[in-house]
Image 1 (cartoon, rainbow, N blue to C red):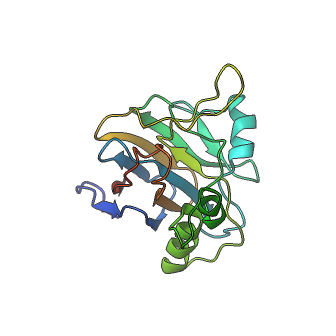
Image 2 (cartoon, rainbow, N blue to C red):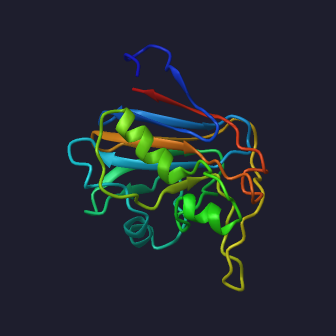
Length: 203
């Protein structure tokens, strides 16, 4: 968090973990794919009522497509604006279809012991920031290279982005943003190596 006219403070999202922060209406969040290979699961909740949250189902209806573009406004489960995409160096190459990974997903992939996951990361980060939530919404999966193929399949492709790629979103209400550096290291979605990412909050 910074005062107007000062340099934004860069906050680290540690590999396999999440961070949550309050963002006041009108402030901007820049999420940075520091190494170019990291998927970042993104959630946003109304800071005054976490039962209202950014909803991928409602966003797709608002966009009339499954991927948002620069200038689009993400909406909540009450169909109200919550985040507007101001800049995006990946040109909309993000995912709104896939659920956050969870321990059950890793069990399906053969894990016998606990594996960190974005669902638990969300709850851990929100509780750590002092906020209660009642469910895990579907995330806005930044830099997740999972396009819908012509045969209607969804492939978990390796990352295809550049170091330092970023997306800038403006808060359309007071919100809490939560960002998880996805722990997936079994499929190639993070290049088989989860890494840290960063974000900044500015005027």
